[in-house]
Length: 96
Image 1 (tube, rainbow, N blue to C red):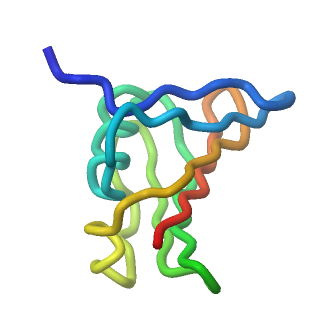
Image 2 (image 1 turned 180 degrees about the vertical axis):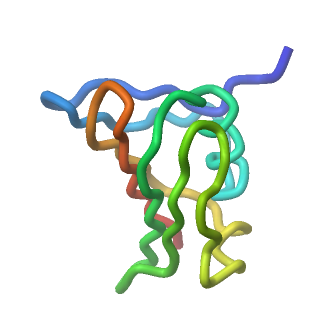
């Protein structure tokens, strides 16, 4: 059984914040979302300290367009938020 990396808690209607159980890279986060939320679609945006670093689309367990900045995959996530509901969910990740 795979160790759980994080879980989301509702912060406001259709707004969720992630609680991480250990360090998690952007690549691990995306892999987990694709595996566990295969009926969703939306965007994943990675923010650095001062600006957005990368974004990609996902739908039904697959990436629909890759990051333009592949280095973002190896960054450790500081915080993660989810916005949306039912099947359309966008994720905002903050990294150092």
